[in-house]
Image (cartoon, rainbow, N blue to C red; front, side, top):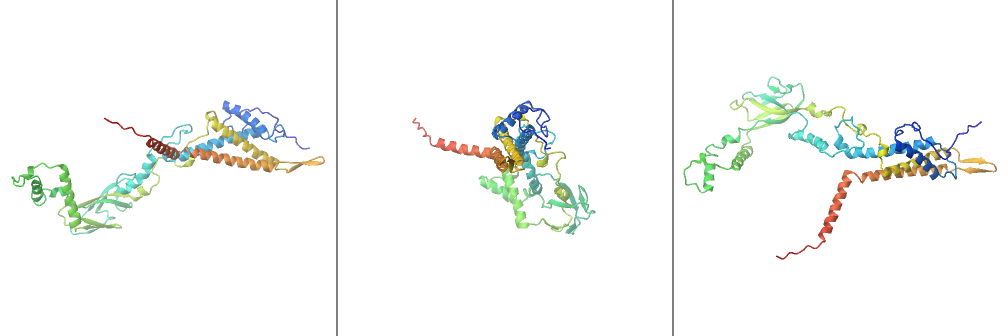
Length: 387
């Protein structure tokens, strides 16, 4: 004997636990809307003019899925729009219903990588090292721990990369007051500029603006670099060649700054237990009672589409039902295609709506509004004031 399975009787009573997951079952507003939506879906599909081969728990499952899908789409949009601002934040707090403020943290973190290479900051430690020079020796091996001293350890144990070598001529300030550049010709030229050239040459006591000192020092440095180019080096692999050949008269060490290549190659510079990707951004399911009426209308429509799809699968099991002297043709395929099309259209509509509310879209609209307002203001005749 075939089992008589009850179908939609015309009404339903919801109790917590009637949905597959029970995510929202204890929400009083949810309990009211789920019963009304089940009744609405059944009537939208033809009840009571036609039987609806679904039970109340089927409608309840569709409604729960619709709420979850709505929350998932909204949360996906929020994650995508805020991801750059959330990297590195704690994963313990629920971000649903919270305002995420825009910040420069993510952009600055990206820029730090460039700052490391440019020597203007960054997130890789710069260390100091030195090479002990030998008189009349021009080439030095950077892996030789007997002559190379590293702040981070012994030479040769870690692969390093030099960032700056302090092998330069004596500071230009020491030449500022020499007979050629300073108290002689240079200052005398300044006296002539002020019209004091025929006075006493006590130029050492003449006060000059700071920028004049800076310009003169810069001129000396350019002169040494372009015309003399005496202090230089050549760094290839682990060997450094110094110019000019050290004679031991000025200094005995060459200092340099370096980084450890392992520090730069380390991609795990952040703290553990923080937001790292899409999967661990702490957006939880929406609170149904906080969903506005616009969102609830989308949820009802999506629940109806799911119910149509479910009923289409059920009726599609048999294309026709025999009755005395005839047969009844079922519309399973029509319900199935209609439900799937409505689901796709609703998802597309919601995604498009959310995209129009992104930070980028809002700024573009504000820019367009500002441009339009400016054009309108330019058409207003200006008053002419006659004094």
